[in-house]
Image 1 (tube, rainbow, N blue to C red):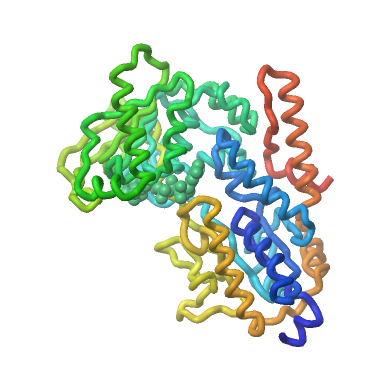
Image 2 (cartoon, rainbow, N blue to C red):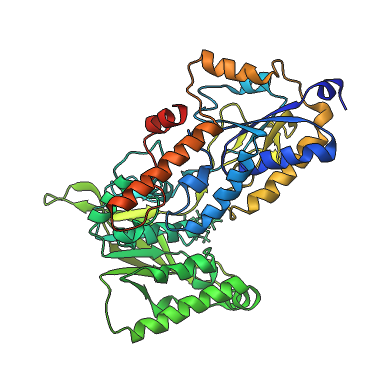
Length: 473
Ligand code: NAP
């Protein structure tokens, strides 16, 4: 071992306190004994509260996710990872600041932006990215407090779990979400929503969906919402038959969908809201409304699709037939996209930091010493939360095998970075601060329960200033 690291701990900064960052920090902390090393870990986040996409990306009616929060909470409660929240890397601290204070930096900044959908009309008022909507209903500190929910008919584009989350939240009756931790402003807006029909559109067939079985089945649990399917969409080519035979998840989901198709024929009572699932619809244009004089309103009035057919391989080809739907809002749930960290090489086609197995590479493909990536910013926005653990293990293995060649920090003292933040007037938050905010939100939940008719465990605090103030009190 290098002389330096036998006399002091290896200083590591992990940027992003979502699951990827907490898992990486945890694996690093646990590796100390096995490798006879000492690590001193600082976990940064640009938000005042930790947990990233678990707090700001998971639908509020998915309480089982709380199990993951509990596990992450336990890791942080151990006390061997220092949280420094409300610190934006790129604004409050530069990459050079990190390099001078740490021997290694791991980026776990995730992917929170919407992927682009390049069709005409995407810029119209009423066309929204799903990631933005999710951030709003999850009370993200940087999003506006109001959201225009004025549409009766809504299109959701995409056949992944985010499309399901968005469609479920849009179609549910607001009072059925009141038991969750949605912020008050979200409840009030949802309560006023005049929505009657939410249409979810997939460009491929029922055997090519990216949903997962549990999440799909959950659609049918919404009270007073009918699921509506079209028999014409249930077309299966050779590749679909093969997928149904060989993949249990696909088989289960196709069964679920086919059962719903049968059940809708036997339905005797009609719900006040409908959730339509359409397949083989490729979006080609978001249509603008027209004023009486023929000029455009600038607002969404409909959406045009090309009818697709399966080509035998599980992919689709156009039929030349076009279908228009009258909708007043379009939500694009076609995947997330990572954001660039200034000064770190970025693959702007895939939306990931350039890396090999978690080692960050320069434009010539050489490892930038002491620089690593993990989670969605390493491999792209696919997979469930648990998958980021495997990612983190691979990245930490790389870091540990590089230990002799880490570029040593100039100011490795743990107090030095705190002094720097204070000298710049950065109102950083800590794990102790989060415990205060956590307690505060739980108390708000108790108060709401006492004054209302439903039980609320937690009510999230927004905006950012309030979060910071409560955390730093
Ligand atoms: P996703 O699973 O990758 O789904 C994206 C969907 O958008 C696919 O159906 C894709 O169709 C479609 N799409 C992409 N480009 C399109 C285009 N130009 N036009 C029309 N459709 C297009 O992404 P996601 O829904 O954002 O989810 C990201 C990850 O988070 C996934 O792993 C998901 O399971 C996970 N997640 C899990 C939960 C949960 O509750 N467990 C909740 C949310 C998210 P093609 O298949 O044809 O490309």
